[in-house]
Image (cartoon, rainbow, N blue to C red; front, top):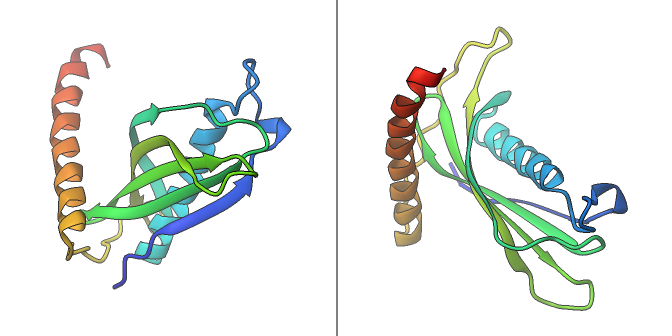
Length: 155
């Protein structure tokens, strides 16, 4: 199966504005979830639900009226889960190059009509970059397990 990145491009709108005059972080998070969903359902061929969003890193604000590009790609698969790397870029309409503005990993699980987990096709990295991305996803899973153990007394 080919692991083709999903890419959305659009212009940020005045309705996306926050109190500081830039794109609201919640709007960016919505775009991340939409691109992740498109990637997960394309990979699995099934309805998929978000189970984890981690380490959202906002590098720079996105200005209203800039062209936004959201890229999503599978970087690891479990039995039913898909770990997807999301990068958000933007550029001024007058500039040719995009700048990275946000990054995160989002995990989806494929489910049936009753919400039961479904198996997904195993993704096998081929290039060195893909192998690095898979190792990154695995390391983040290990860190999440440690964080969850730390949180248990507070849940």
